[in-house]
Structures are given as C-alpha cells and as structure tokens.
Image 1 (tube, rainbow, N blue to C red):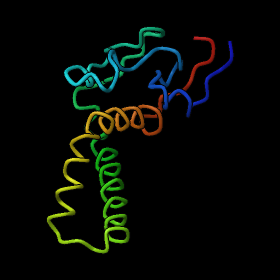
Image 2: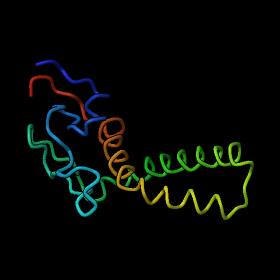
Image 3: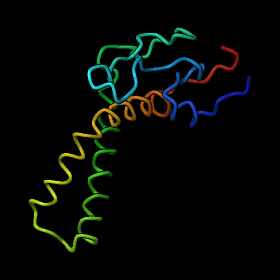
Length: 125
C-alpha cells in the first residue's frame, strides 16, 4: 500500500501518526454529529485529545480561517458589488460564517493535529 502524504491525510481527516485511521466519526454535513471525534485512532490507538482543553489552540486556527473567508468575501463585495452599504456586508458574511462553521471546526482541529501538535508520522502502523 502506498504511503499517504501529510497533506493527503489532513485533507481526508486521517490520523497524523498512522495516516490511516479517521479522526471524525461522521461526515461534516451531518449537522447533529459533525463534531463527533474518535477518542482514539481506530487504526493505531493515538489519543487525539491528549489533555483537557487540548483543542483550545484550534480556536486560533478557526479564527484565522473565519477571518480569511470574511476578508475575501468583503473584498469581493467591495469590488464586485461596488461597495454596498454596511448591512449588505453583514447580511452576506454572517450567514456564510454560520454555514461554514462545521467545515471550519473540522479544518481547525485537523490542522491543529497535523501541523501544530507535533505528532510524528510512524511508518508501518
């Protein structure tokens, strides 16, 4: 079997150590269960939340993702919408932030696990 790159594992929501086990139990579009994570990797047994509050750092990643999306939308509205009134920005950007919340939640945790937490890939697990 071919090795999965770190980027492929992150994009597919796979364990940062073995790159085979899934991090989340349900798909992101499952509105009631989008945040259900495995406590341990189903393949290698890595504990995802190593201590209470471990994913608080993922909030910074989430903030950056949300800010980036809002900034891009703001620029698009400014240039393509000919600088509309303030309420138009709020009426478009706020619902988009709510709609991307489940995706943002997952992206933030996966990025935190793969790129910030310092979990090393172990080949052959």
